[in-house]
Image (cartoon, rainbow, N blue to C red; front, side):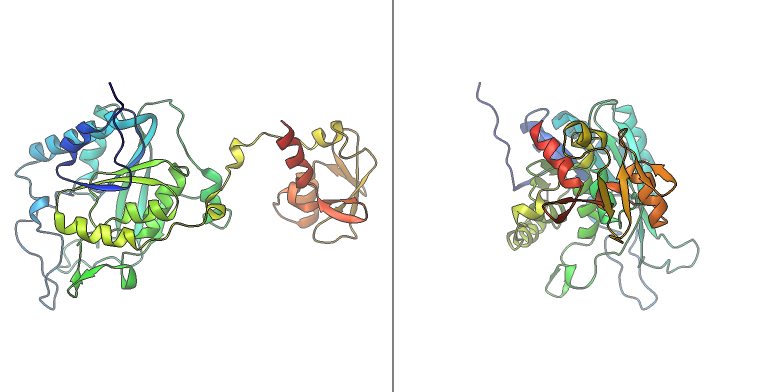
Length: 357
């Protein structure tokens, strides 16, 4: 029996639960789902100036009961779970109207929740009636297909995006506005278009170049646009032909980033090389001097146990660098050795050991 070929970088038209049956099991690396929120509004919502609020009374968000919504949700979640790889993860975004029900159903189906992420909006829509707090955030559930399975999490990439600080679970990002907002005949082309900044973090954190990203509620194509930009493949599913046309035009206009800009190696996946290994390999010697990055007049002596000595202080490359710099630093970036009269950072020697393994 011939293997089923994945419809990579295509938008498939129809019901996602049905279409997903045609895809092979264990074939998708990451899924991002922005399903109907079941807002439960029976009538239109208007602003104080009597302009109509979009996306609160659409037909695709109409469910007669919670039971009907739960059945709908279980069907598409089950279909996604089947096509996710054992190492795959899924993100589902929602509001207080639906996210708690979705989370419970995910757990019932065997998903293991890893995090909930709060998308805190810098520019939320006001509560026009003034009878509740302004809804200023949405919640994303990030879960793996199977508890305990290995999954992708690019921790260092997330730190790099966050000024080298560990990224938290509250993401302060604006709604889609201005040039990013796609319009058709002067109005919003899709009422619930998500910002590219949101998908950028999701895709960067949980996938690698060439991975397959599934979006079963493709809408205006934000997932596909960001996936293409970052060198990932996507599979989109959307019921409305009008939105498919909008999404395809948007994605066609995207230029993928150059290969050299996409190749980011996670440090946690690299071979660990202790500083002492440079002595054992003969790249450095006990008694040799190293120079401090911020002030080359500061010189330390390498001890035989791999520690450094500066005046009365001794310690690791990290501890001594921190003491001299007066704050947390990475010792691999702070110490230089001299070779043929030229100062070179010691991290180059660590890379030589890695490439020899």
